[in-house]
Length: 293
Image (cartoon, rainbow, N blue to C red; front, top):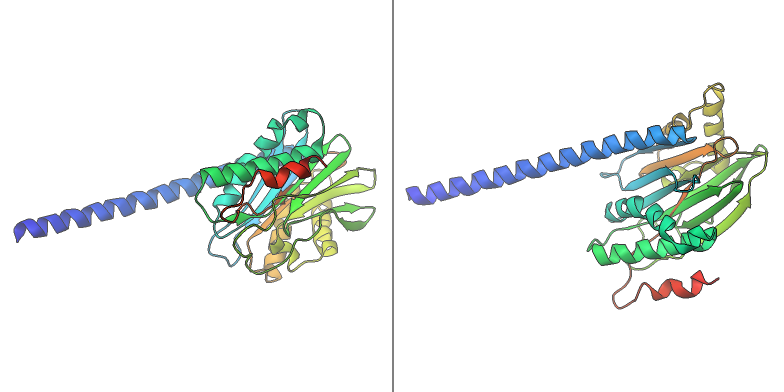
């Protein structure tokens, strides 16, 4: 009897220790994520880009945003709106821009093909390396010189404010409260624009913003926030103001925002896409024909 009690006591102590270790790991991961986000925000401001995110009423923050100066000095920003978990959005956050710069199309300055190849490779690697059933949208805006290239899948919208007007750069994907399991799309819609002196800034956000704010309203919030400090405009302050406005407008979704001045500071933005494939479908074949276009 004493031996049985001792064994149960040991098992209880082991379970308690495992639970404590798991909680400690979660705290460490949360702290590391917070530190990385703060570092990314500081870098984004230096590059003329601002980022912000809010969890809203959702239990978990499944959105991700990245702003970066790429290997040849070009600038890029991307937003990933995850669903069925954060794993896919986190993977794309870490890998999509890496794959973009590894593509042979990148060095040939074929940005449209490079973006499609990056989507394809990231998609295939996630399926290979992860058992997660999560997915994500993606929207990317890349600026090289005065050329702005957009690639997008899903309903994370990119908008440019030019000559006092808001113009949508991306097409909205099919909308549903929760995307269904299976392949939605992994081939991004692409668009190209030559920047002009009338272009003020580009805004990229997840549907937590667009569900409750129009393109014009969102751009006005950003513009007013930037104008409040003309000597030293801070895109991150503008991004935070937009997140707060969306939350006050009763958005219940995760909210993720990026933005920057396209004239003086040359920002770029990102796209979202579903990376899950039904059983029996080969992901590589989905992209081969489209990449030749």
